[in-house]
Image (cartoon, rainbow, N blue to C red; front, side, top):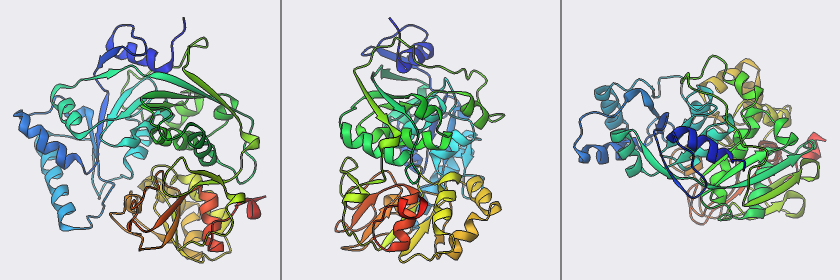
Length: 419
């Protein structure tokens, strides 16, 4: 009987064959944290050990509050910087480095790679599956234990297979697909499951689009999400993969799945997740008039070069009607967008460009919402109070939908301008 991706990669990682429901003890190739490393450090020090198991396997990336927005965050940064120096951790991305949002850096710089196992103290670590890694978020206490021992036990998840065929119509994107999937499966429909994306529709997507899909796997409860580690992935990471043991792994053709869903990309349309849950799916065409006060293009979900490019194509020669924030996914993306003239286009349209980071997505730096304000965002979560006031509203959408809505001052269908 064939094996799923999760069964194959965790069998490889633990050195014996394991099936869904069984326990695998693995040594993650890389362990990622961001500012919450300060809390992990406190737990690690309570264990009483002086040294982490392997400083070269630890990656720490400042992205949630950079530059520090409060004295408390500055103090947390200081704790991490001092720990990094003491432990000899070289894979540290501070404000003055070529950094960015943690999940972007993990894929962009080759820490997450085909056949690798990565864990991160952030729920959207599942994004690394876009490059063929088994990647999952873990708690801070768990991460402290991994720093100490170098290993973690995981129950091998059962799997869901999502087939995508055809091609997107103009103005429809991978964000629209994943919001539709989550709307169908619901926020708990894939609890502790491995979500595999298959089919010609996925094969035709860029690595960036696959990152959008995998990033939001956790929003349906998934343990991990993954796309095929094909030639596009290998080219994207050429010369960057940090672990020479990286070898592509993919599911067998006769693997068994707990559930299968299929989508014809040509039938999809621009959509949103309405407040206050990610599975509150609705096509933009059926929303009616929804005025907005703020638009946000950024986060680990949709802040890469192609996302900024499509936003610029919508905004070129136009002016935004509401405050519009743009946070590139990394400094590399920022520079590439500058070289292409994308940043100039966004500035000319009235956007505010900020340092790469998470910021408004979690309401800790820039772009907080007041009572009764509405934001349309390319982020991955729209929970009550996520971006500021608990009396505000967040609609999740694609960069194209967000950009056109920013021009119109209300949630709008990008096909009006892109078709």
